[in-house]
Length: 485
Image (cartoon, rainbow, N blue to C red; front, side, top):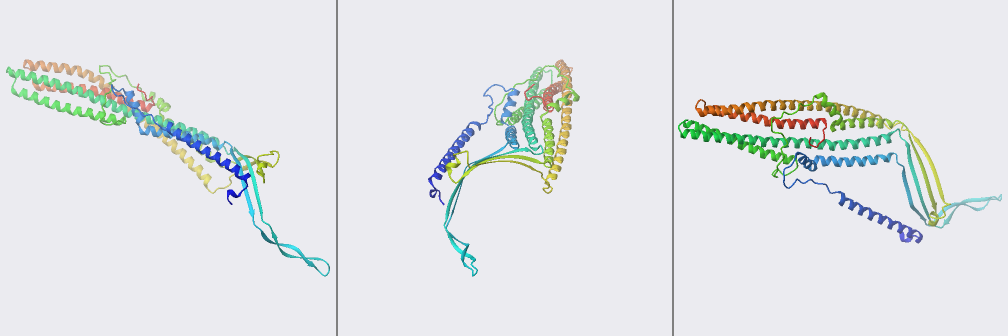
C-alpha cells in the first residue's frame, strides 16, 4: 500500500516528521563542515627568516614538525573520546518512539463455521460445517512511547572501565611528552655536534695561520742563508697537510648542518646559523650528580617510566573488569506508551490510552563456555607482562643515567687537563720557535709543538660539547623539562 492510499490524517503528520528529519540532517552536516574547516588546520612552526637560532628555538621547530609528536597528539584525542564513551556504561539508555503506524488490511474470505443444518428425529438440532463469507477489514493503529533502561550494578565493571579510560588518557599524554623529549634530545645532540664541528674548524684555521707564518719565516731565513732549502719545502708540505685537514673539517661542518636541519624537519640545504652557548674560557664544568641522586628524579619525572607505571595500573583494572563478569548484573527499566486506532487520541486526551511499566532485572552469567575464565587468565598474564616491562625500563634507565654520568665526569676531567695542556703547549711552541730562530732547534720541533697544541685545543673543544651532549642525555633520562637549562 502506498502512502497516497492512506488517510490524510496519517499523511500530514508523516510529512511533517519527514521535514523535521531533513532539517536536522542539513544542520548537522553544516556544523560538521564548519568544524572541519575551522579545527582541522594544524599549527606549523616556521623558522625565523634571519638571525641566529637558539637551542630552544631549534627544539620548538623540531617538535612542531615532528611526525611522531603529531601522531601522539592525535592518539591523545582518540583516548579522550574513548574516555568520554566509557561513561555510557552507567548512563541510562533512553529510546523514544515518536510515531509508530501499523496498518492492516484483509480481503474477503470464506471460512468454515459450525451452523445448524437440520433437526434429528428426536428434535435436536444438527450442526455441520458450513462455508461462510466474511467481508474484508482495514485497521490502522497508532502508538508512541518512551522507554528508559538504567544499569544499577554490573560487578563494578562500569566504574573500572571509566578509571581505565582515564588512565589511558594520561598514558597517551605521557606518550606526547616522551616523543617531545626524544626529539629534544636528538636536536640537542646535533646542535652541539654542529657547534663542536664549527669550533674544531676554528682550531684548524688557527693551525693553518701558524703554518703560513712559519712558511714565511722559513722562507725569510732561507733568503738570508740561515736555513737550508729543505726547511722551506718542509714548511710548505706541512701547510698543505694542515689545509687538507681544514678542508675536511669544513665539509664536516656542512654535514653537521644538514643533519641538524633533518632533525628539525627542514630541508637539508636550508641555511642555518645557531648561537654558541658554551663558555670557551678555562671555566671547569660543575661536578655531576651521583646515580643515587639522579634515580629518584627519573622514577618520579621520566615520562616513559610514568607511562609504563600507568600501564600496570590499567592492567590491574583489566583483571578486575574480567573478574566482574562472575558477579550478577542489575538493571532497572521504565516505560511509557500511548496507543489508539486514531491518531488524535495518541497526541491528545492524555488521560487515556496509556500504559506505564516498571521493571527490575537481576541476571547472573552462569556459564558462557570458557570465555570468562579465559579473559581472567589473559588479563593476569598481561599484568605480569606490564610489570616486567616496567622493571626492564627502570633498569635500562639506570644504565642510561650511569653512562651519562660517566661521560659527564670524563668530559669534565678532560676539560681540566686540556686547559693545563694548552698553556704548556703554547709555551712549548714559543720556545721551539725561539730555538729555531737562533739556530739551536729544528723545524720538526716546531711542527711537533704545533700538532700538540692543536690536539690539546681539539680535546678541549670536544670535551666541552661532549659534556653538553651527556647533560642532554641525563636530562632526558631523569625527566627534566624539554626547555633548555
